[in-house]
Length: 207
Image 1 (spheres, one colour):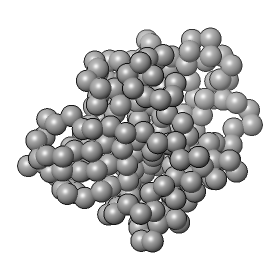
Image 2 (image 1 turned 135 degrees about the vertical axis):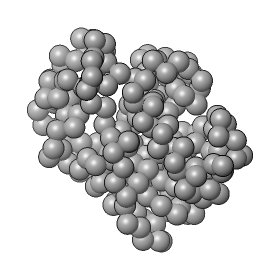
Image 3 (image 1 turned 90 degrees about the vertical axis):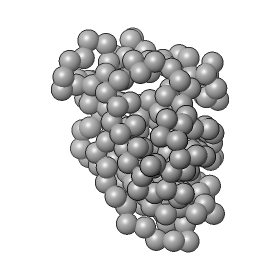
Image 4 (image 1 turned 120 degrees about the vertical axis):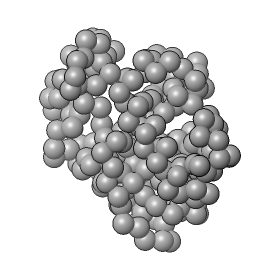
């Protein structure tokens, strides 16, 4: 059976994006100087936690964030790459953010496979967490991922519909910001071995 787990879900730091595009899974998008500072601040917030393992998505920005977070921790870790916490796959890579602002960054409506909708995002994220609960029973684990993955887990923890990404409603549901900030830390705490447990949720912007 799956066990108790404290899961620190870190969104990557701010990205260097001079052309202001939705970069999605495009390669070559690194952290900005601000993003590197944010990641260090997240590391300082987690430095006293008894973290056993670090996971991150395959993207450059999450791997850089993970290494900066780890640099502040007294233990050393080998980061494990996990595809199930990758950025959403949507057909807007390279599109100007000013264009996406007109639809409030709706990157899901009308998507068909292989592109993803919110239910796909939640399914793969929860599959990963189910494995974590079996693999890391009683431990504290950190993952570095992307904003909409954080939102998908938040919406699940708030027991909202799997098709709901919460556009414009996150504050009403208890998130203290319109959207999870870069390098923010969302903590999901599972207290029992019940595989159907809904975890306690806490949010921290460490800067």
